[in-house]
Amino acid sequence: MLALVAGVVVALYLGLFLGPSATPRLGLDLRGGTQVILQASPLHHQKLTKGALDQAVNIIRNRVNGAGVAGATIATQGSNDIIVSAPGANHKQLEALDQTALLRFRQVLAVTSGTPAPPATASPSASASAAPTAKVGAKPTATKTSAHDRVPAALLAAGASPKPTPTPSGSATPSPSASASPAASASPSSGTNDLTPAPNTDSADLATAEKGFAEYNCNDGRAPTKGNDDPKHYIVACSKNGGVKYLLAPAGVEGTEIGGADSTIDSTTNQWLVQLHWKGNGQDDWFNLTRKAYRADPSGQNQNCLPPTGCNMIAVVLDGEVESAPVSQADGIAGDTQITGNFSQSEANNLANVLKYGALPLKLEKLDTSTVSATLGSAQLRGGLIAGIIGLGLVILYSLLYYRALGLVTVASLGLSGMILYAVTTLLGHSSLGYTLSLPGIAGFIVAVGITADSFVVYFERIRDEVREGKRLRSAVERAWPRARRTIISADAVSLLAAVVLYLASIGDVRGFAFTLGLSTLSDLFIVFCFTKPLLAVMARRRAFDAGAAWTGVGRARSGAILEPKEA
Image (cartoon, rainbow, N blue to C red; front, side, top):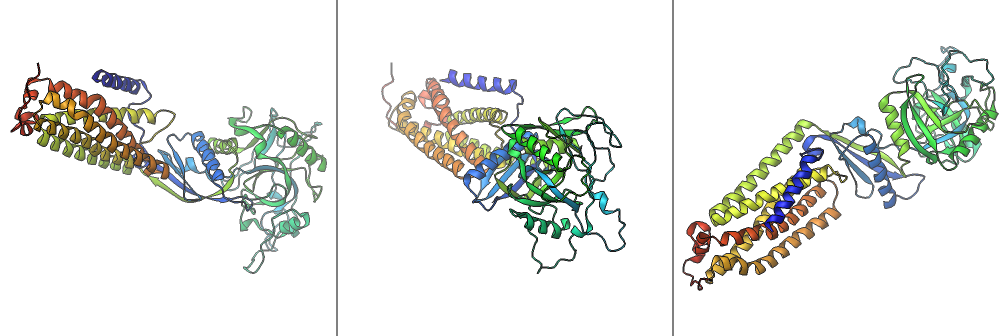
């Protein structure tokens, strides 16, 4: 048995030193990081189901992993909350978690300024500059913009990468800009009061949607539908900067028809873009949508586009906001698609991750975002280790004072248990399980020290009982073991059952406590059976122990006992 224990320890530490790291992966509260609490609500007035929450957890986990955050824990709490704890991450890495990724492509039926025209002092040309200038099949011209008024993204046919030109070319392939002139009369009046009913911005009836389009002001909220729009309805939507307002037809292509999304750099412009790959009927739907938009105005000028024919513009709608409204330059475009728009690397990566990992089956709202600094995490780790050392020291001191030399068995067993638990915790942290050690996890290890010590006390006291009855130590070790074994197994089974139930019924950090408690209990059983008992059997063969000298820890039990004849 002792050889088995030695082999297990050697194997664990070979894996430890040959692995990626020799230190455990620490949790949020020990090394700092960010925790986000998300509140879920159903889409389209549906019921919030456990299946939808579980699907959301899986999608969020993929998004977090895709953002390069390792060791994060994502779990549900209560009936509609999701908690994301990401050690070592900052809030910017988790900013896209609550995006529902409801990506849809819709034909633009009308476009105008997103805000009311100023009073008489406004110049006639002011309203015409709000419309986007994007094209399908060609890159948008470079335009200087502020961070709050970025040029909308362009939608490109895959493989089409002509150099940007300052003016439309005279080639057979049309390349006009989408420079629709918004009508001033369509702008809603400002100064609405609480008695004014909210405009209907999501309707199956085109006339109702047109009325909502005329009344809505993008200053009231840049995503009128809040990303909760019906794909079969006409909707009103705004650009991300709120400067342009659109009336959009029912969705022509759903985001679920995207087979993949990758962020990459355009070799021509050296700008970041997102490459979309279609799946299933996606290519056919995309071809039909671009054909319909092109036939609305083959010239692409879009000077007088009106419902129901609409404009030669295709809105890329993400969560109720128009990311881009490019012009179709062909009578139906086949193949994959690119989204460009002066993205930074992080913006392109975030958008690709949101699209790649699918649409959430519900709407999420961030209730709270909290960050633990690395300094505070280090202080809590130091405090947990100090508490563990004090507790372990007291157990060792008691064992040595009360059991004397037998207490050395306790010290050796606890030391071996600590080595095994350290190696297992480290290996689990750097495996596919990604286990992270938290402060409650350290508390679980500290509590388990007492459970392990209880096993030794049970066995030692059984040995003493046998010695009082006149047995020599060598015989007492063997005779005491069956009764002590039953008690140890019963006690550890109760602790293990409690740990399993607590792990299954709890979430977050409490699970960390339950996991380490259960792991320590299993370690205790292994140590007692394979190390403590065999080691005592070896020690009992020594003459000094067998004779019951005072320093052995069984001397008091030996005094007054009638010894059995010495075995041959």
